[in-house]
Length: 229
Ligand SMILES: Cc1cc2nc3c(=O)[nH]c(=O)nc-3n(C[C@H](O)[C@H](O)[C@H](O)COP(=O)(O)O)c2cc1C
Image (tube, rainbow, N blue to C red; front, side, top):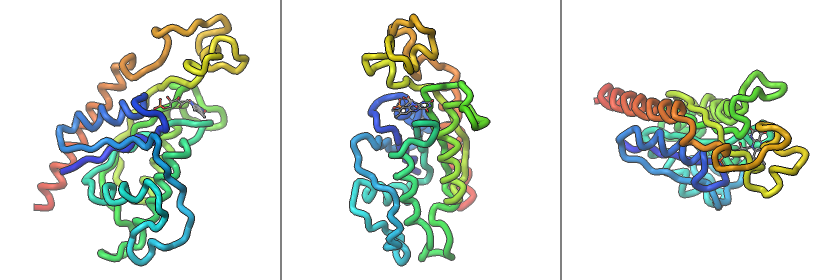
């Protein structure tokens, strides 16, 4: 059994990737973690080239991932909140799941139907309420990923949310900029020190939940496997 983890943040080795890895490691199964950092992944262009064979024809870095998604017994998708929405790289990647429609091997419908999935959702605003949406900042990306899961009939095992570091902590202007997220969190006179920068290690309850989800995923996969025997 293999679990595929995708970190949809353009940043490498940050909160999204760490959260996906925590879930994967807790499964105790064979896993592969792929960061979309540096990858060129277009959105679906609706060429419909996939309709006859379920193979996407847009030649970019999605192509090798397509086969991995299909073959994985379960997927863990990590994504980040950008501008109160699912970040574009994650969105482009998930749009390309369109190639899994029109299943020619089975009875029509979705080739990913019934595959188990976990969502790792990250937002720099953490538990702050998202204006105009009845959700917390770190829930937004996960809610959007859930929409893709529903369309593709991927069975959601669970969602874990973490606060990541807004870019204001590292842009160089976080202590002086009038719209600094650092000031918004810690006040006008905030000084950026390592202690105040959010990261996964400072959120033990989130790590516990991610590990618990990994174990649940293992149990569900093992049960599904036995049921099929
Ligand atoms: C362009 C951009 C827009 C962002 N907009 C939001 C936002 O609206 N709400 C929020 O909570 N975080 C926002 N963030 C912060 C990210 O969610 C945060 O940096 C997160 O940690 C990214 O995941 P990573 O650490 O794995 O890269 C934004 C970050 C960027 C780069």
